[in-house]
Length: 144
Image (cartoon, rainbow, N blue to C red; front, side, top):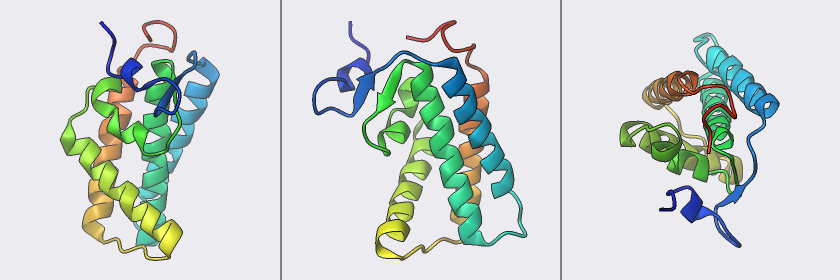
C-alpha cells in the first residue's frame, strides 16, 4: 500500500523522492530552532517576530519532510503534509497554512496584516512542530 506522501510524488506533483541527509536535517532543525527562539523576543517588532516564526516553522516542517526522504516542489506543501510527517493535526497545520497566506500577501502585495494573536498562535504551532521533530530518531534510523 502506498503512503500518502508517496501518492504526492511523480511528474508535476508536489513532492520528489530524495534520500534523507543527516547534515541537511540538522542544519534545517538548527536554523528553525534559532529563529523560533528569536521570534519569542518580545522587544522585536510584531512583523519581525512573525517573519522569524514563519521561517522557523517552514525550516522545521521541511526538516520533517526531508527526514521521510522527500523534497517539496512547493513551499506550502510542507505544512499540508504535517499529519503524515509528524502526526500533527489541524490545530497546527491550519495555523501554519493561514500564516503562509499572510506571508505571501506581505511578500507579493506588501500587505502584512498581523497582530499579537496570530504571532502567538504561530509560535505555539511552531513549538508543536519542534517538539514532534525532537521525537524522531536520527535520519536514516527509521525514515522512509
